[in-house]
Amino acid sequence: MNLIGRITGIITNPRETVQDISENSHIEDAVLIIGIFAILSAIFGYMSQNIIIYEFIGMDQGDPGASSYSAASGSSVFTIIIGFISVIIGWIIVSGIVHLFSIALGGEGSFKKVLMINSYANIPLLLGTVVNLILISLMSPKNLVFDFSTVSSPFSIMFDMVEISTRALMSDPYYQVIYVITIVANLWTIGLVILGIKFIHDLSINRALIAVSILILLFIVGNGPTLYFMFS
Image (cartoon, rainbow, N blue to C red; front, side):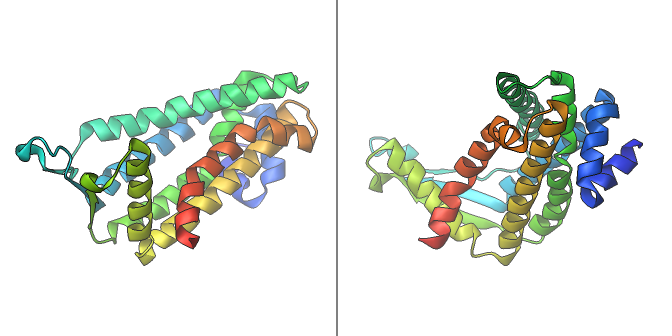
């Protein structure tokens, strides 16, 4: 099975394709896939900063000149670079943690193969990001205002920022679709990694699930606050 066959197979026949990747794939293909995903993620982050504009007021009551601050983000090479690098580093770190957990649970596979399966497993996220780029380009800019003079602690600031951001963004139908696509793609990716670890490390499905618990935890932490404010 070639690269294109594996990419389409991840969608149409995941079990057989994941098994083929665990046995016959090349690291070069994995690097290419994660590289494309990193580029798309960086572009999405850049576009998000132009759509979502944060304005902070009352940041320093002792300095009238600093009573307000606009963090509107325009063109930012730094943002794109950070977005790209964070995907690459995250891929390596998460793969390493999953591999160590798998070994501790009796797995016998290699770190290289875990890197490969983790890259291919990101294909649903890659495809979801392509759709999300189209959707975010249709969104109108949103100006979110945070009043620092009304908060009493750093935790309160973060809590208020998450709440205001979530409620404002979720009022936009395009962002609602973006969020649903992201949730589905993440769950799909986690499922593919679990399946891949099962084949690579020759583990039971339950042990593979435990080995991939870091991804499940990151998913819960990343989406917990948003879901809380959506339904509260």
